[in-house]
Image (cartoon, rainbow, N blue to C red; front, side, top):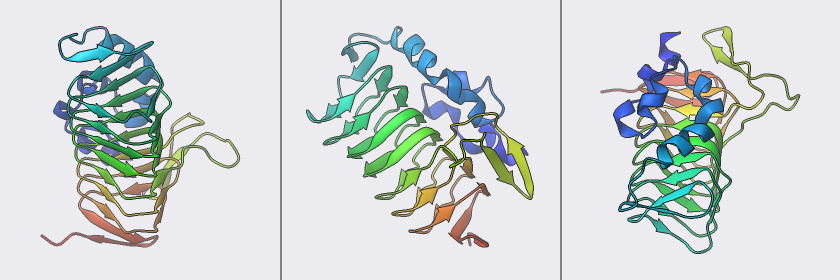
Length: 222
């Protein structure tokens, strides 16, 4: 199951959560501690670079935040990140540097690596999005099964137990998600992989591939 490991998905130098994530093997293991991590990091941030707004909300002074955005704590918004009109950050969101959190985007219990873009009408919950990952307009991470049973990761014919009722998606570095796609609970997508628009994705998609539809996943040509 090495392809599911944190070190296979992410360059940890591109997130304030890097040291924290080194303490885990698989990304879903890190979800339960995101809130505490944000508070711990937030209390170390320089007031010259970050402004504290409300309870456990730290926003880089170079970030651009629309007046209509809602930001609940605990939350960190990194340098030069743009939070656009009517974004709804419910809390437990660690957003890196030079990211885009767009109009009507909702975030909850997430780690967003540097240079990641979630720009239009997206829901991202209980998930980790890697360096320079991009979610097309309307794409979402579904994070709970209809029967409320614990989420499993479908991996090469096996089911990997997470032990969690709420688990979204884990996008490796440079992943591209096409518009209006739905990533089902427990989706893991390897680095540099593209997902076609209007896709319904479940389970593991390997690195350096193109996901066209279920059963049609092709390796990228170099």
